[in-house]
Image (cartoon, rainbow, N blue to C red; front, side, top):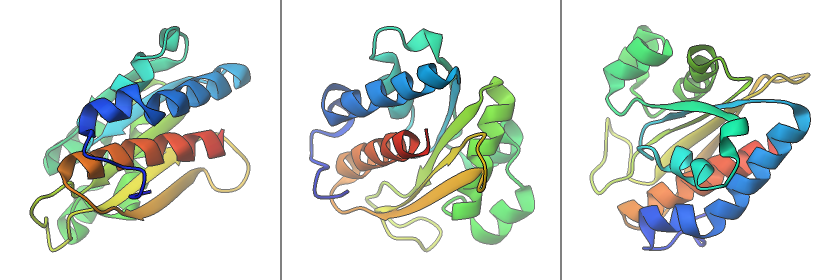
Length: 174
């Protein structure tokens, strides 16, 4: 993932490869009659921006929640406060709960989530570039798919890589 992320940063996620992945996610969801909700932390709205950059996104995208502060993950998305206190926000179970929570909050069929450390400094003992992305979808087997990423580069590259990764995971799941 990190090899494709560049210093183009936030705009690169919306104008470059993220647009293609966003189109694929929206098309796959529309073909199945599914709606999307997005919970973002380190990406700060870039995933939703990539999706709404595609004409017709409103037919599929219900909305998004930027829960940047740890306490908002619990208050807005229903992430277990004890889990957050014990492990912090950069955790695979937190990503999974964010994806499930945004489904509930937005009334969407599919939830996408990003959480991690964009840098430049570590957070809660985690290095910059450690990111978890999750997709919760109604499907047989595992309801939530979570991926760990170890992205390299400056803050914009990490954020762009997280956008690309969650959209790519959503394409796989859908």
